Length: 288
Ligand code: ZN
Ligand code: FE
Ligand code: FE
Ligand code: ZN
Image (cartoon, rainbow, N blue to C red):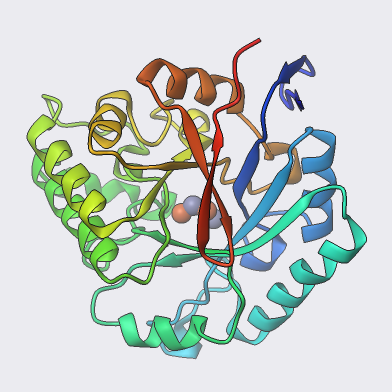
């Protein structure tokens, strides 16, 4: 029995089954607050069974002097990040603590990423698309450039990159699958055909897709992925994991009740559980 304490309202609910949050950041990335230990304590307080870290990977595709310390952790602290999380396992046996990373997909830099990640014992690696042809669309500083695009074409290009990321085989989980909608820009009609082909391609690549609750806290106000996209994924047999994309300890497990209700509604019955990049499955916690 999992007791999920709602961070926002202070309301408490009980959820049978096991529950994880596989997507949290720490102060190391320069735009989040809280130490790894504070996230572990928040996860225990929220009644989670597993907490998984997914810090932003160093900006491996840029020369060191061009790397903005407020976008991702510096490379010289990468090892310390992994060590800190692994050390916490011994201190908090009451919760499973997983070591992961959120890696940007940048076409042409696959080998650089592969060798950067190789030395560490990952439980999972996220592949996230935060850049469309060099444009960091999810960064508030550059969000103005949406006006330069036809949104339907932008979605097509964005999802082409997501599929290319999946095809590299470098990633276990695709992070915030439709984050391109973050600021509320949507094609005039739901791109059903695009979503079907994305789901088919991700299924062929055997990647897990993350249900990411950060979208609830953004202007779009929705789960990543959206309901129509989620339906296509489940139809294609894709497995899901769950993450809050917390950038503060108080956001651990944020929006989970709402997300679980959406997943249930869509017919999702289980979540993926990772260990050293191997998968098992746990039943989706039931509603009260
Ligand atoms: Zn971040
Ligand atoms: Fe991200
Ligand atoms: Fe993230
Ligand atoms: Zn993220």
